[in-house]
Amino acid sequence: MNNPAPAQPAELVARLRATFRAGKTKPVAWRTEQLHRMRTLLTEQGETFAEALHADLGKSSTEAYRTEIDFVIREIDHTLEHLDGWLRPEPAPVPAFIGEARAWTQYDPLGVVLVIAPWNYPAQLLLAPVAGALAAGNAVVAKPSELAPATSAALARLVPQYLDTDAVAVVEGGVPETTALLEQRFDHILYTGNGTVGRIVMAAAVRHLTPVTLELGGKSPAFVDRGTDLDTVAARLAAGKFLNAGQTCVAPDYVLTDPETARALEASLAKAVEGLYGSDPAASPEYGRIVNERHFDRLTALLDSGRQVTGGAHDRETKYIAPTVLAEVSPDAQVMQEEIFGPILPIVEVAGLDEAIDFINDRDKPLALYAFTDSDATRERLAAETSSGGLGFGLPLAHLTVSDLPFGGVGESGMGSYHGRYSIETFSHRKAVLAKPL
Ligand code: NAD
Image (tube, rainbow, N blue to C red; front, side, top):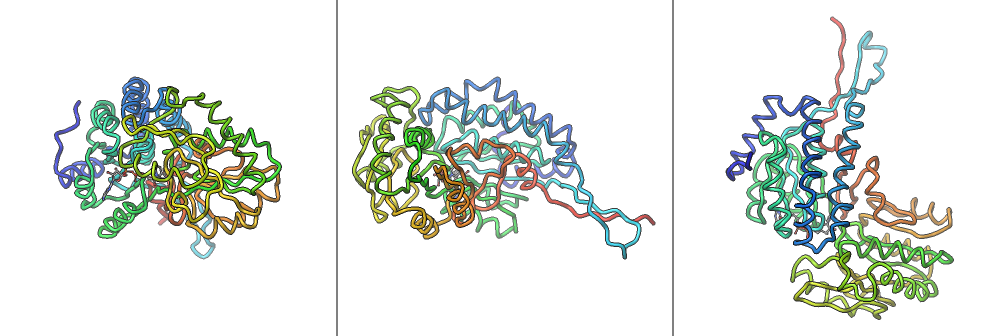
């Protein structure tokens, strides 16, 4: 079946709400069927998505499968395996003065959920929340990013061929279309993107008292301790930073380390980049491109924020910016004023751990904090004395592939979380029930 002709947002939401009210989305059998169908969509149409992701972001097929297609399949499989258990009502002890009675909590679906996705992982960041919302028994309106037009078109064309069109709709478009959607009453909105639009989404949600999950970004620091194996550190840092040409919300944004370690790390990072993409990353099929000219121009303006250790080459025509490492970067440099969201890795020098902790706490709470250290005491201090959406020791990005960990930010990096059972919590109401015999 094709996506129904683009209805007015009010009609669309009314139609999905009618499906929800009729009870169609609530049975666990319907939910698991939708998850299986989404899984089939991803396996049968994997190549279509990989091609679209290549057209939008120059993503290699390996990267498209690893970070988008197979990522969502894993999330679906994990949910299918555990959904019954997650949904099981949880008994609660009843106080004696009530006498004979039972009490429990149960997860109720919320109704119609709106998912608004960004362009950087345009398939994953749309489909993973949709999978969670469906697993929780909701109807869903999904709005892909207009800045990844090939992926957006593929989603709009294919999702209705696989999922139940009575309950799931993909609405393409940019600001006007999203603004029109946001005028409707939803029962939950999950938005992934930047904080400026996050505020617009939250302000729109206020009118209907709709709860929001805001998956935002920010500058995620990576602290490198003295005395660590810097070749290993550099290899992992570079792999995490330059994936998707640095356009990853949880990418290490900048490095914090002492001056002596910084000098040695520079050389290791240059080596690591070459190990990943060869001497000419422009020729590597594994290296991505910047999403559009606006971001290309924004990023190239940051390239002289420090001494270039490696990289710096760029080509506007192909939206290529080489993996770039900048040393001796001042905290006042332009590159340290905003989330970089591109393939530029500044190294900022601090005296040591105390100053690093202050540096982190003086700024917005990051979506992720990374630390490379062999010291348990240092790990414990970072865990106890800083706040971030997630915390990764020794390996960037990996925490978000653990389906049993909540994925979300805190403060400026967002509110709420999802993935695995946390998607059920986000897209459900935990209802309190008491039952006393008559
Ligand atoms: P984007 O420009 O694609 O915008 C995201 C969505 O918001 C799109 O669907 C877009 O159509 C919509 N939108 C844009 N302007 C709007 C407006 N005025 N009103 C209503 N809707 C509007 O993506 P972006 O914001 O450039 O994404 C990059 C940001 O997202 C970075 O800050 C990054 O760190 C963050 N991010 C966070 C996560 C996460 O999971 N926490 C994941 C990816 C990206």
